[in-house]
Picture 1 (cartoon, rainbow, N blue to C red):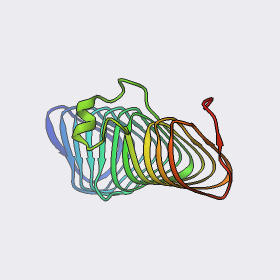
Picture 2 (cartoon, rainbow, N blue to C red; picture 1 turned 60 degrees about the horizontal axis):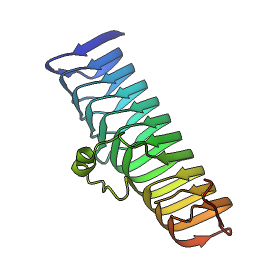
Picture 3 (cartoon, rainbow, N blue to C red; picture 1 turned 90 degrees about the vertical axis):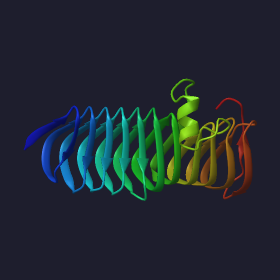
Picture 4 (tube, rainbow, N blue to C red; picture 1 turned 135 degrees about the vertical axis):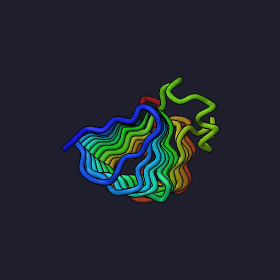
Amino acid sequence: MRDISIEGVGSVSGGEYNKISIEGVGSISDDIKAVEIYIEGVFNCNGRIESDFISCEGVATMNEAIRANRIDISGVMTLKEANLEAKTINCEGVIKSNAEISADKTVVDGCIKAAEIVGDEVIISHTPGRASRGIRKLFGISSENLSSIGLIEATTIRINDAKVKIVNGENITIGEYCEVDDIDCTGKLLIHPRAKVGRITGVTAEYSEEI
């Protein structure tokens, strides 16, 4: 398998690759398989992607399904009706998805706006300075709630500073400044006093500032 690198403006043909590097402006119109994909520039993809590892430090727009073992995002990734499936997702940048994000473990320390996140473990937090106010505004993420999700469903869920419609899980921790409409918990439920929670089913919640 061969390597391909785009430093100016170019496109990648469909097929199998060892390493794909996008440092300029690149596009793909067919399905690809690659061991590694590095996005440091601007990338637009209209084909399905299968990869062991994807790193996005630039701006990527995905219009078809993505499947990978590991995905690291410190830039901006937009998924337009494209499902994202991985074993591990680490995001310190911005994810915007209109479809399903599925991973064994999803860790977000930035901003995420998604329809659904499902998996075994979901952790959403925010470190000041990770994503600028301008980026949040550009992608429709308010400063009051840095992350906005329709549904989170996982065995273990821990969220801070997020607005979520429905949270379903076994062990759930709702941190400060969260807003959650509905929670269904089958194990242990911890809620910070500064979180706003609507309906709770399954268990009785414990309230603590030590979370």
